[in-house]
Image (tube, rainbow, N blue to C red):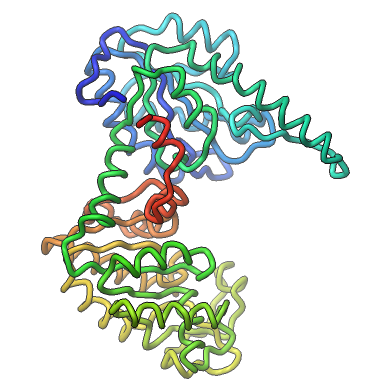
Length: 422
């Protein structure tokens, strides 16, 4: 394993796995350039060292070649952020790509087309008939794995060294995130995003300054069970908001109207475990609720909003945002904390009517950071919220990973990390 700060990039063609999987609107314009902006330091480092870049990435979940998922759509934003022309190969492993990579000069940037246009990237067969037999499935999988080796070797042949700077895909054992590293046993390294993510998570999970407070939001407990279990061994305080909070209130005997509710028994087990581990759990005490359906809310319909005691939500009402009494209590916890982890919004922040709670949490995390706390914000919705409210620069670290962040915090060894360290 090499280190990006010490590696000699002079006259080297550097193949880099970036995460340029960014949202596009109907006109195929980038609506959130966070992931591209995050890659700029690694790009500048390689150029400053005298190298050229061959950029790999995926975009979306295509089932084959599709113009809707072409990486050409991100080129205007990419060129603006790196301040120079981006060369583009319309096939990531085609002859055009090979020739363009071969002729790259120091300081030039070549973007390869979407890796996932090929099933070899993920190593899974596509378009199998619904009635395919087990033997047919096994044969198709074997064929893809064999083709995957050729795919990896082709990509590796373009370059002299490999950099993985895609933390968001580090939990996937794909061709470009894991297997290709084996072709560069002495010339592989993490980019600045990967380094930063690992350092931030290690700081929070293994060496936090206390008190350590985690904020968990989002809609479902079921998706957060492993991280909750891990955090109960790490944190002093656990703030639970968003849709998942109602299951806990139900477990404590509250009336939650028609608010989201999952496994009550699971919530009871978590509450018991927290008590045994001396972790203080802070649930909402009030809620902003409406009779309107969730679809009506998301479609922008005018809705009635009432604030209720969290334990006394009337039938027919669903809670969609934390109330200000809850926020005031949570703020005091955050202001007394030295380490803060935020994963998941505490309301339907995408809709202005129910965004106040998440905005207030974001501001509180930023204020606590300004007073000396270390704050890590991670998870797709949390990152979207912190960016929407223009608070990203006011927290310590904003993770680019979703599933990868959660798995790493759970203690799972990520294939993309392991492949570089081996």
